[in-house]
Image (cartoon, rainbow, N blue to C red):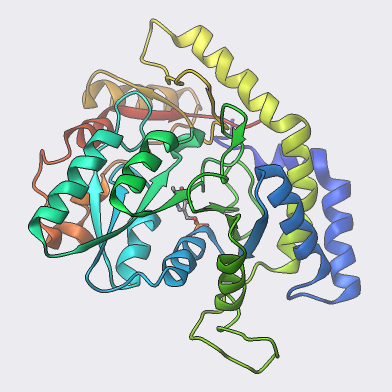
Amino acid sequence: MQFIDLKAQYARLKEEIDTGISNVLCHGKFISGPEVAQLEKELADYAGVKHCVSCANGTDALELLLMAAGIGAGDAVFVPSFTFMSTAEVVSVVGATPVFVDINEDTFNMDAEKLAQAVAQTKAEGVLSPRAIIAVDLFGQCADHDKIAGVAADNGLLLFEDGAQGFGGTIGDKRACSFGDAATTSFFPAKPLGCYGDGGAIFTNDDELCEILSSLRIHGKGREKYDNVRVGRNSRLDTMQAAILVPKLHAFAEYELEARHKWADRYTELLSGVVKTPVLPEGFTSSWAQYTIILESEEQRDGLKNYLSEKGIPSMVYYPRPLHRQTAYLHLGYEEGSLPVSEKLSKFVLSLPMHPYL
Ligand SMILES: *Cc1c(COP(=O)(O)O)cnc(C)c1O
């Protein structure tokens, strides 16, 4: 059994995907071909925003946003500690400093009250200038975007949604990748909507931001091809990957997301009362990038992982070490015990196989 069965998905979509790839091979527009614009339009429509700007991967998507916002040395960007490295890494890469915030034990996502405390503390210290928040939709479940937007507004901070795992999740009638000032996603193969390599996208309703991002991803391009109006990057989504993503997005919208909901409900039905199953707040739905249970101790978690492995059932620990305790960030001086929920969950969580073809 597979943890995420991409082969079963390909078997189902083979004809459309093969045709898409073959079309690209025939027209030969491997960079910025027509499939890229088609995909961007369909993604923006799905998320319910005005613009989608595709790029090379989900990490670049975040970095391009920070570049567009002019965030750099001396700036503080607030991020959850219980997430994938990219969320904090991009902050460091542009020269700013990540400030790690603890999470809510039920949702795995950034705790808005602890965020407000971290912003107040950073202001009081007076060393870094608070500039932005990156709220992550971990495991497919949207962050508490309403409350976090309140903290952003109270403090004049930009709010970005890292929807790398969140694509397909909802709060009320709003879909993931439509929250904050701008949002990002990743098409890494294992994400809810993945391609066959690396890919990413940025979503925003802001016309000016869209124009800056479109320029930044092509070396700070101006109106003409060899006119460079700013220093940018090379970060485009390949036409081939866009051609693969178009039929995958259709399958996602037509039946895959529904199948994810069905399997998650089935897990919850069978496991509730046995282990702590995921909690969705009222009005939230998840795209179930992961179905993650919480055990009672590290020994129990590791024991269950080994037991499942003996039975041929793969499981994964996302994430075994919170970012504030990663070697790369020890210099920031976060002691053990400083973000207790992130530290505890890193020892107690286990993600079970989850995909639409389970
Ligand atoms: C996967 C992921 C990213 C980065 O995406 P890539 O396409 O792999 O660069 C960023 N944030 C989170 C939360 C992720 O899970």
